[in-house]
Length: 363
Image: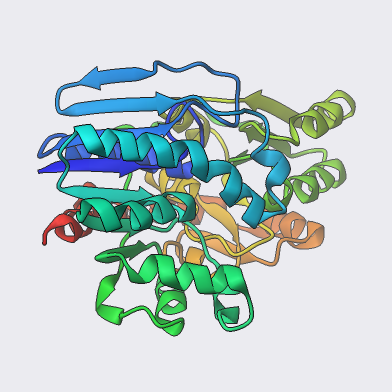
């Protein structure tokens, strides 16, 4: 089978979706010929190869204007208009000259491209969603929501990360049999417990995009009030400078910048807990899967999507306020939670989860 993975974002962009796509591509190219069509990194200045080839894999990255995506974060419609044009033309040209059996789109922009081009090419089309779209419930009130219904109703399968997300699509009129729930998976050999030293003082870790709705400012305020606890930040984004400023006046803040996904295991292993203080409904924080696989408990915002991958035996749910985070860091027995993490992760997040996606490719 020849599979085209269509996504605006791919390695060396960093993020949970990009890492999932790395895992997906590696899994699928053992069984199928895989093509990836994406942009050059839009959220950093890294220059990646235009064409990258491996056995059963070809990655094509097209150039586009950089520096706009993060600025358009508050405006989803403008983000959509920014991401679609060049990738649409490149996909059309690619499909004219290459035979593919399945197009697997990731996210709304790629979904729109696959849906429109399928009027011409008539292939099996599958889409993965990686977020919660709460505005879908207003489908009768907004043009954008109505357009989403039109886009997604044309897909053979819709893959969602949580039952909450699945319910969203069904509620707007998508056929239930089309909407399938799946989970990310992580390489249990890469992410595993190997605590290399014993911490002399408590330490907590944040990993992710450094943007407002990830709760970065809240976490910095917690650090200022709990100076006996180390707070480490890994990631890149618009709030990098905010963390750097805080680091200069607070000795308990460590800003480690961008790290390769394969490097993260060491950091997960050497903190008491990973914190996911998101201020919005997370679909599924991949960081949670990686941390638990390393035997590290998680403190996470109480979101429906997160509750489907985390429970009280390995983590703590919070309303992400300064007071709540401080209290949990001081009062939780993380050693007790840590004993359950690896077994939980092996059961929940193995590569067996990829079977759902393979089945979606079959007509």
